[in-house]
Amino acid sequence: MPQKLIVVAFAVSPEDGATESVLERIERSGGAVESHNWVRVTDSASDGQATDVEGYNALTVHVTASSPETLREALQPDRLDQALPGVDLNVVDARWFDNSVRKLVVTDVDSTLIRQEVIEMLAAHVGLEAEVAAVTERAMRGEIDFEQSLRDRVAVLKGLTASVIHEVSSAVRLSPGATVLVKTLLGSGHAVAAVSGGFHQILDPLAEDLGLTRAAANTLEIEDGVLTGRVTGPVVDREAKARFLRQWAEELDIAPENVMAVGDGANDVEMCRAAGLSVAYRAKPALREVADTQLNIPNLDALRFFVDL
Image (cartoon, rainbow, N blue to C red; front, side, top):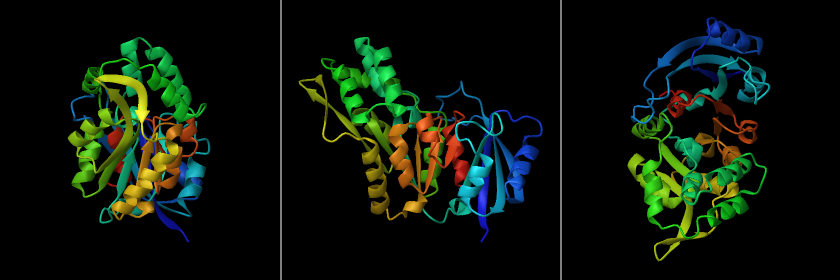
């Protein structure tokens, strides 16, 4: 039985003939095009923190096809290489456009909701930013165990005064369009949560400022105003992220198929597998290979086009 689907394509500067190329590819893939339209988005990051990022173009195509999975495979056979250079081709079920049904969007934090990796910012205060960044990169690629890598990276922070956390928190920059995305979703009655392999001390003020529905992260241990080089409690790893997603969906009475997960690395794989729709945002190959959709432009607010907002 054919299904109603939406193809959403993103490009910063689409080439002449881009529309025809996308539509032709859909039709060659067995999809029947019903309607389509381009939207040019400018000043997407109206939070005022991303004046260095240009706008983008979004093409929405209403189609009928056998299934989202079949059309995705046909449009983007190699998830690590764009079928049309410079264009992200994504497929979502048309039910995501029904805003009468409440959705939950769960996003990773470091390099997703925010631009930076907080552990690297903290490590810069002990002169080890490059070394810690190299370990972070390997962890996000899934080459080493996340929990052990986190404990090893946190250990180098031993002896830093807790005031450094405030300095780092003040330097954190939201990803372009993050504020627009969150406010649009919340304003439309949906829920937005953040789960981080980073730290509560950084996430909590962000969550409060953005009005997030739920938030979870690790906790840096502090004794007598000094970081001990340890985290307290269970580590928020890839399995924990998936558990939080399921827990929040249940608490908010939102069906799993109406949950969107957004991340950038291997630590987000299980969370994405647990969601009804997963998004690899400027992601490492480990996540791009399993996510339902990809957003490779630096504009987080483009996710609004997956829910017709």
